[in-house]
Image (spheres, one colour):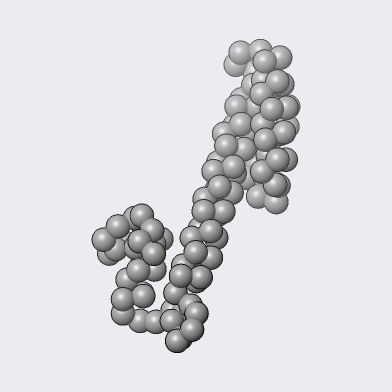
Length: 105
């Protein structure tokens, strides 16, 4: 079984990653314990899981960024300013120095 590395997986969609995970899982069942094929399958499953987690994380970040830009812009300026808005952005994204890791927008 071919080892799937993270670089290859970064370009895949969530549905492609799910299908790959299923395929590799089925292939894992057919491997012998301790074989190179089994090690590759296990490493591939771990890489796929990481890619899926990273993809989910990026969707969350994009959703929070969109939420933040909608809630802070509008009539009267708003937008991203220094001061309170900057602190709210830090809290929204859970940066160090923020008071909360949960969106407070």
